[in-house]
Amino acid sequence: MKPTTKRRANKTGRSSGRFVMLPEWLQKSDAWASLKPGPRALYVELKRRFDGTNNGGIFLSHRDAAAALNVNKDTVAGWFADLQERGFITLTQGGHLGPSGIGMAAKWALQEEGLDGKAPAKGFMAWRGKQNPVPKTRTPRPKFPDTL
Image (cartoon, rainbow, N blue to C red; front, side):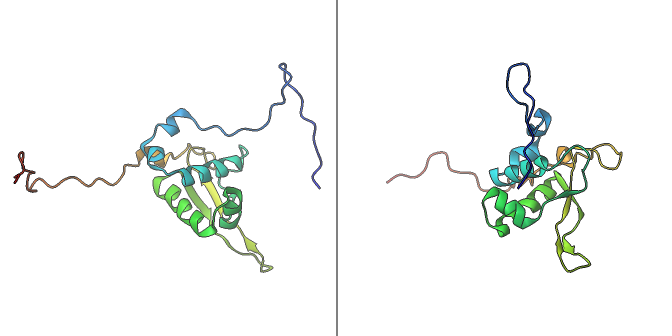
């Protein structure tokens, strides 16, 4: 059973709990706009586990993420791949079996936050979607279709 801690109320009488901040510049990025709701929810779950000092050591296994988001663990695997591809997260240590044979979850880093005293990488700001230009040699559509 977890010990309960009494939160102090602020001057309005409400207690101030933790929150997850998603900056406006992150939400305006092309990479964020291209994400589906599932990977966005996974990013919020990763950000919830960031306490300000543990970037690069954020533990979140596929099973724990699936349980937190109420989806299958195979679904979550694709969401992790989407976030990595777009540059939102980096895998700092892969999941593995520990010395006693107990599984250890993967460790993640958020690229919007600094890591090891370095400036944030922000790889998602440079991400550009796959562009499939229309070939210039295509046959134009007729302006007046034949009618019978």
